[in-house]
Picture (cartoon, each protein chain N blue to C red):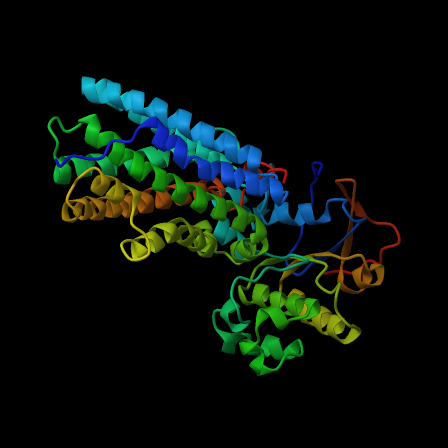
Length: 195
Length: 269
């Protein structure tokens, strides 16, 4: 159970979300994405979430879970327009033929990167990432971090769950700690980076 | 109607030898089903004997109230059976209410339609026609709804990630649940479709066989059987569609979220 929490996230800002396993980090992201019943006031650019239909809200506030789901047989079927996704696909190290790859042959790391592209294709204002690089090699981690950094530079707001303290310092402007369902901002020993 | 060959109790007892034979095989091969086999056989005899008494009384009084009460009892019992056949049930009253409500709506609608347009007994609620017709439609409707709801709930649990992946990208609950819904409806309708496809070639349905044994000319018995198969297909389809749609409605909410918290824990195996 997540305890009452208050936080704000600006456009072009990234907050790292850290804490022990089972502390409530995923619950926090799911609550913001409105995937689980939750109470409280959530606003986006001054608009109350309750005035926005669920599907529209989730197009504005994207969520990438640690184990993304797939509903069709091949990669291409999960993307509306494959040609529009090609630039991102190549940036994250996939060939154009990835479109025809069966989902069952994808590794965990490939699934995570392709799901990230899928989430970015919707062009959300806010992106909630749940350990998006946990199963990736160093080169792929760098590619994902640079892609997200570019988007943050263009105004995307990101809440990024990570267990990697170094990654948190590389990608985030602020740090949020979640422990036993309690959310608090960590200010000590955190480099002051302006968004 | 032509005369039929009446059975006496000794002849029924002789046929029961095969049940005892199966029980003996269960003991020899350590199958451990002999007890449940004998209990089921005794239950069947007692239930049918009671039904025989009830039907005899019902047929003699031809009352709309008693016919309606008998139909209600059948529907309520079928609802209980459909609920018990599900691995994961909807919580609260939805568990019993959804299946039973859909079953009642579909089977009563289809039975009344057949009574008023095809069979046309006088009076239209004559229990000699209404009760057997409802029984056959209800039995198949119950199987279809139980299969449909069971497939829906187990698939939503096992494919939660794929349904939520679509919701996260802005899909509506209807679009996100559509593949699971189609699978549930296919499961619900498949027994009826298979049954229609092989009827008359692989199997002779019980009702038609019963009529022929009772002295009805085969051509007439076939007409009744075709009518019943159409009614079963219609009732099962209608019941399953409404039950599965109701299940999707209950297992999602107005914010287009998947609500698996509205399911009970799976049955202990």
